[in-house]
Image (cartoon, rainbow, N blue to C red):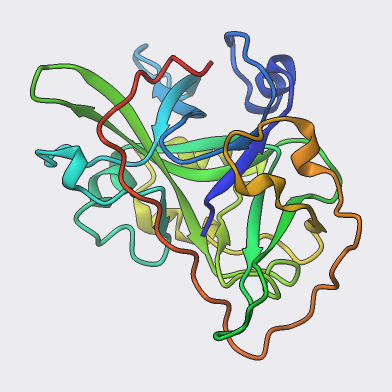
Length: 264
């Protein structure tokens, strides 16, 4: 599961990473939470005859996927993640997996190691980032939802997969990471069906990430500064759990689509 992440790269760095022709300015964000706007990269097929290249554009989407057939968002579960193993068959994600695959720009993500059942200990937060630094691209899905009054809002979810070596002691799921060399293939929904990109939905290679124990500041969405990524004073060792990590509780559904441009 991925329930919080960060994007602290500069707009220029994001533009270079994803090969964007242009991008609007945005601030560093250290504690991105569900229902907030997230930066995604989508591919647009060039219209010129015989030109099979794909343009890429950056846009904002509400983190919380809403299928087009939903009638009342307030009564629909908040879908911030989609299991990569089953997304192509699930009614909520099937169309997006075929037609609207995107990349989610991030600097890393947060995960909580849950204590054993019955323990009085608190969950332990970790900041999980690329060991080499830089930007990471999560595999995502998007859907443009139209409300009853005709208002449109772009929504998105992050695809998840089983953990690699660094994440396994903390949680049993992690975001799917797409390598830059595979950006075009992942975004090419015209020529690449879900079965053609299934090989991309695998755990990141062992050693790609590093997990840093951080303080409980990250637990509160209101804490949105760089202090949430500071290593905890007393770092807790990461040990292999005796049982699979307990899933994080599902986020509560939002009351309705917010203004997706408000927080940028």
